[in-house]
Image (tube, rainbow, N blue to C red; front, side, top):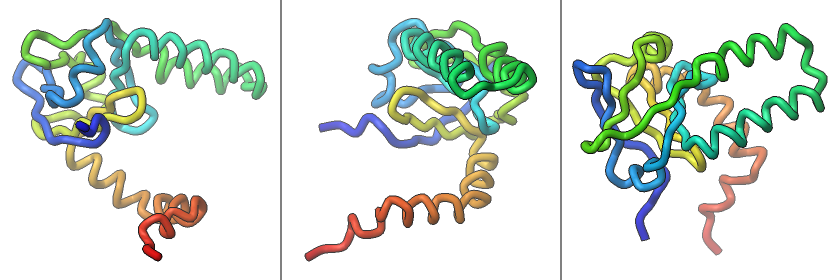
Length: 153
């Protein structure tokens, strides 16, 4: 069994392309969508996942009574920056200049594969994000009782 989630270091080349690790590529062969992430990163997902995501956002915005300002900001941040993308024959994805600037992508990148999307981070930005959210991660682990998972007998 091969692990399909996780992270791997990568690089941004001079043409703004990031190499996607081989173990993740199979999941991202279809038409892709690339956009801003909620954090200072870039999200990449298949077109079908993007369609569900956008539909869910719109439906939940009505259910949760988002006001016009809240919806506008969310729409501008995520939906308004979405662009079609694809992996090239070498398994690279071109990151548009506006998204590279937003995510502070330079040479050293971290590619993280979650359940249904890739996140591409600048390595330094990612480490700062993790360091700044250590307390949040610890609280979530405690809330889930996850520290007990690794205890034996």
